[in-house]
Image 1 (cartoon, rainbow, N blue to C red):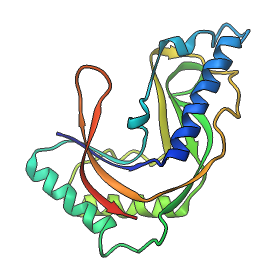
Image 2: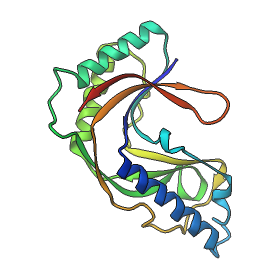
Image 3: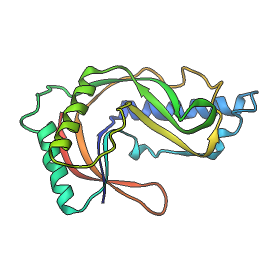
Image 4: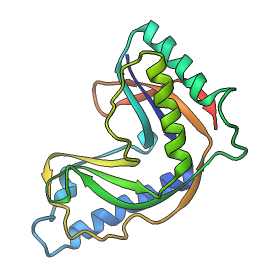
Length: 195
């Protein structure tokens, strides 16, 4: 099973991201710049139910790996973790593309700087290390994947303010299992912890 830890988004963040998607599409349709014209006609938009902030992607594991991941989640977010009375405060801020705007394969929404988010991510990664679990050790770049492109798209010239600066609170950290095949992936909750 493919496992990852993530933060699910509340409705106010999801609503803002859907509005951003509409802004991108409208800008794309109205652009005189041929580089970006029709880019979003080729986009595979992330379904609302799949939008989340990935903290750590673990990859394929068996039942023993799942048990170890659940234990690492408990260490990072459970009873021994610092308590948060009202969840983790985050804010949508800007957008970008991987690998770059001129040849985008992923369109993402960014998040404002959050020392607390970096701290819980570091705590999770340390717990995964202690458990001996493999995970993607790329530097943590908080982002929310909005769309994927099968061919690189040139997104230069799209409006810089398409993603509204909406603040929100995340209340839970989740260990998900990703189920692939026949359309967008489905995410099944395997463990949850209150932040």
